[in-house]
Length: 571
Image (cartoon, rainbow, N blue to C red; front, side, top):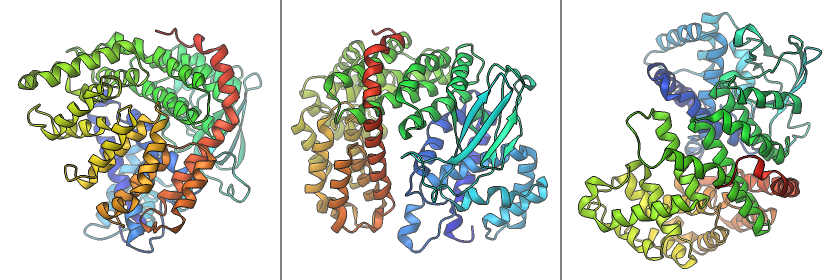
């Protein structure tokens, strides 16, 4: 790259090529499906904020450089390369990349240089197609109004914002959008190469086609908002097994985002959970999205909803993940594929988070066996995949003494033969304690010389995660953070990028406008150069969740009272 404003050329392409090659060598790992629920989602989430930045961002100083090593640079960059390569075709794309690398061997290059090489290889005006994607903030949501009887789709695009509908000034970009349209009734499910160039377009489809799906395999970087009938037809197709996992993931991810931003009511997604679970089978990616949505829903509601409502949300999660964890068991089997092992590693902690009694009892028993027999640590009573879950559940749901025991294991990790990852899991598990005095003791412990400065981030991350079910966590954490802010700055350094991550994590667990205003005022006289992007983004997320609750609290309460039992039977 010629300068830091083209950082995405390095990092975005490196991310894409790594996943592309891995997917070719090990297709059974489903790397692009995993990218869709982790990295792509991180980019879409960050870029849906008013406080986002273009992928090609002007760099004014060293503090700006540190802050652009983020999900926009890495994962939006990767997603754009994937979208473009899917549209041009992988052969033409790679031919252009080879020519680009040869032309600039041992030199520097810019985004324009890459576009030129791809244009020569493909014959398409790549620079025009991609200009808005790299120089403008954000991405579109494509609304689909389907008339199946008439054989017509009316498509509209506009900027997607997590906070809801954009103003006219905010919605002035018209993106080039590859539609990636599929249906079982059209061309045997092959992906259409149709593209959208206008704000509104009409597309003809065969009359009475059973269903239509845009953005096949999540190759495009945009959301899709289906009309109620189109979404219901897709739900039926999912239950019949007519959609690939990647497309189920795309529908679910988009629907979650559209619920939070107000395009779709929360009850509409809750109605579809059964369809998604049936379509998921043993696909860990779908289960992971469902679990994350229910956790986010509970974390948003827990500050203001009456306790019975959050108890019902947790019960719904328990009814899904408890039976799944019981069916999969704690032991990996020799005939398990890599995806089943991942599903087991997701289901057990989710069931534990939801308070499933069998999982909690088993985790506490396994912890007792592990702690009591350090000399047998080479023959651990459970697979190492579950170490973090066992430690966390034992501290949160076991006797108070487990907190001190886990601390002992952290300090004497060799005695229990803990890897460095599991040693960090022990440190984080201490922050999962239910008692407020133990939470404060853990935070103080993280500031001692027994913990490396950078590992404070682990403790705070665990405490924020625990706030999804423990409403006292956020206030304990905020009060400690504000009282000890200068100590934290002195320990980490005022210009440390890690300071920004900690600030974002502490702020991010709140969900009321009042708290957002309080936080904003508190930082008013602080030096925030190291996190002047992170701070407004985190506050915007808080206000987004506040708006979600204000808009849909009655809707969720009604659904829980009438329909929760229809999704899955409780365990």
